[in-house]
Amino acid sequence: MHTQRANAKGEQRTKRVVVLGSTGSIGKQTLEVVAHNNAEHDRGRSPERFKIVGLGAGSDFATLRGQGELLGIADLALNDTGAALDESGLRVRRGNDAARRLIEDTHPDLVVAAIVGIAGLDSVLCALELGIDVALANKESLVAGGSLVLAAARKSGACIFPVDSEHSGVWQCLLGILGTDYTPPAPINDSIRRITLTASGGPFRQWSLDDIASATPSDAINHPNWSMGAKVSIDSATLMNKGLELIEAHWLFGVDADRLDAIIHPQSIVHAFVECVDHSVIAQLGAADMRCPIQHALAFPNRNNGACQTLDLQSLSRLDFSPIDSDRFPAVGFALDAIRAGGTAGAVLNAGNEVAVRAFLDGQIDFLRIGEVVARVIDTVPTQPIQSIDDVLAADAAARECALRLTGSVIGGTR
Image (cartoon, rainbow, N blue to C red; front, side, top):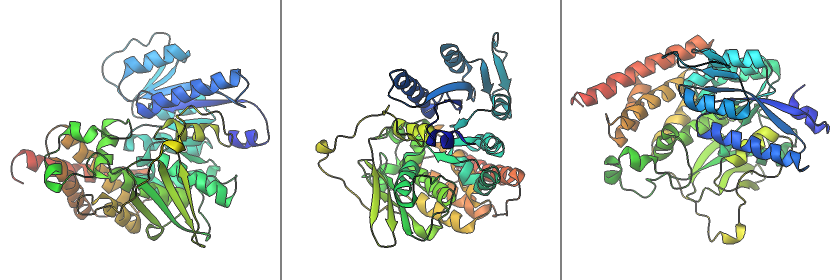
């Protein structure tokens, strides 16, 4: 029985949680949310306590170890297999399958999947195959391997609780429309006409194409509303983040590209709209604070005292909305095309983008070249059906190789 269903019956128990990507922005905020909720529980204001039983990271062992020592956690996972580390007093799993082994060894009630990139897919599949619910902050798992992720969840009965603010917003709207027991991944019914995600527009929302062409990595990372890691910040600046989120929504809520949309909303107050067939539109609002959707995913179906900021409605002077300029921000169109193509199209899109973003951050290509590289990769690498994770990884590798060649040609001055 899933933890959230037990809680729905009023039982009070400790929810055991593994946090993967604990040294990143989402991981650190998850630990803040857990600490807040445990303090509220001790004050009698929260029905549930959380216990972190495992932490995982990519290569930042110093931060990972510090988190483990602070929380009294010895079970750790580190993707990096490089230099020798002082692992005394710890149970550290290392290697590409470290996160999977951590999940298998600790068998928690919930896995917070916040590993960035395709590297997070294996651990997401592992958790779902074991019937463990996943609080998903790793969008690449659904973008690249959505069909595999859904198959694993449906077979085991595990749920996927979205952590992205937009998908959390959609989910919360659907809870009001479809019923309080609705959990992804489950297809919505015919009462829903359209799902619309909002995009802040990033730092370049009002920049001209000429200005965007000369943007530096520091310009692109300087997001006006959200504090995020470098990769996600660049994706927000290109609006690829919104494109990837549309692919996520396709898998989480069972909707095709023609029922999905995105709109610019610079205040980042409204996170999602759900339009019903009677044309009534339900919206979810909240402060631009990732601790809000993190807490909803962890505490569901409970509504605990918030760890995030309160939205002061009286201070809001206006809420603005505008269409996305596809000439400056083609990424959303790439994503909708990937949904329609199916198969490995999402994996190809994601891999090409990851390489292009890395090249931009390393100063190898200019900002507008990110979209050009992704478009070329999509045109070059054929879409194939997905039968296993090997098909996803093969498409990922082919797309990365293609993108590396393209970014390499820029470095060589032959563009």
